[in-house]
Amino acid sequence: MDCVFCKIVNNELPSYKVYEDDLVLAFLDLNPVSLGHTLIIPKKHYQNIFDIENKVLKRIAKVSKIIASKLKENLDDVSGVNIFQSNGKTAEQVVMHYHMHIIPRRKQDNFRINDCLKSLKLEHNQFKDILNKIKV
Ligand SMILES: [Zn+2]
Image 1 (cartoon, helix red, strand yellow):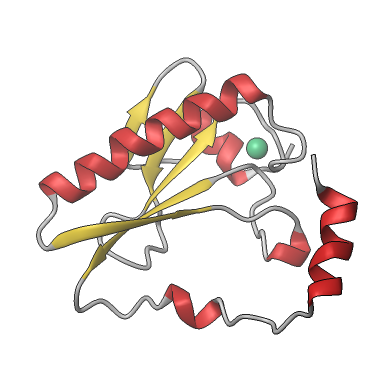
Image 2: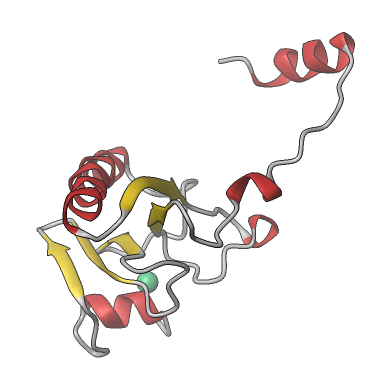
């Protein structure tokens, strides 16, 4: 399979490894939006949230906390962290191997996540309709 993240897992491509265990690998993003931008990936190839196993997802969540804390404690001026990941081409997922972004934030950085989160104005019936379809 021609997957850049699988190649990193298999050491066929170099990476700046931050963390590694039996299930997951974390390494510095080579196209960082801020200093310290880290990716956490499963070692096994899963495309995204729709096919990843819960056991692996739990480990990624745990490791995200470890790395977020490291970034905040050890990098200059980091006072916040964004954590996100994309699922599917519609959601602008580019590398089709599950990955979670850990992005350290500094007060004067140029990364503005709220610019992407402009809200829709919905009526009560629209909320109710959606709820009827997705409530678990
Ligand atoms: Zn892969």
